[in-house]
Image (cartoon, rainbow, N blue to C red; front, side):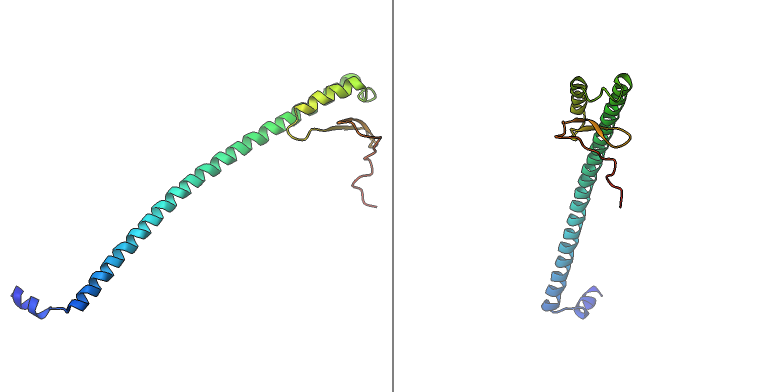
Length: 139
């Protein structure tokens, strides 16, 4: 019975070779797809780790910068309260403001302005008197 079944199912060599080629091609394509997905998963996991680390570093840097600015503002306000607005332009006070500026991250400047917009003290020093009271107001 098995022999009669084999006689009935004899396939030409060309058909068998095409079937084998299609099967081999399917195995190769499946292997490439699995390899690509595996490689993509590893790259994605690595990228997610890098992004999370970068976000944490940026958050820490921003927090530290804001704390430094807050500290300098509080110190400058305390100095103004101690010495008064009129004395803040003296050379010794500008020197103290210069020490405050060194604690600032990247900005490197402090301007103390009165209610009408006159710059009373500036580090680094300005070349002449400046009034910023009318800046930004449309005519």
